[in-house]
Length: 178
Image 1: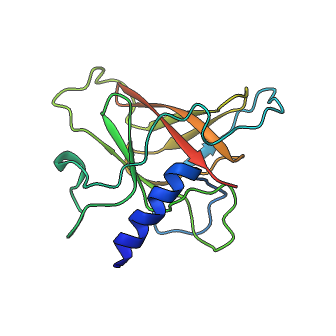
Image 2: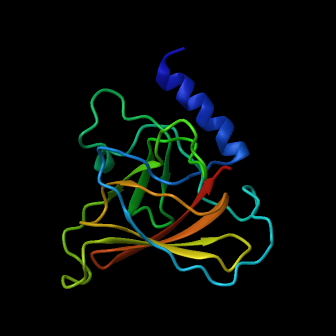
């Protein structure tokens, strides 16, 4: 079985079990700036299965999202609810704590739009993430808009993401394993 085959098998297992993220280390990819706002978080345990509705896909990326990929464009990815953005998960599963020196690298690819709903809106991708079942909320930004990033979350669990960029919006759920 090739490396993509093993990755796809692992992605399937993680889809059932959940996924995770952690603090970013050195990387050649531009990192996302992290501004964190945590409101009175509850002690509710965030279950990876409870409330996470964005499945991890492993089939080929759509034509609008595969620019720059050579050979197969198969790998773990999650579509926004509207289908206007996709998160390509280079670090899979995402982890709240990464002990192997790797990062939670995510490539954000937005569907090309002929016109922006608001041409004065900043291009920065703003991610407002809420931990399922809690009041814990954090904000992450990817300067310049959708593109490569390192996105870490402060706790393991299912994170509901509200995504805003260039006058566009979409939502998705990502799971971060411990």
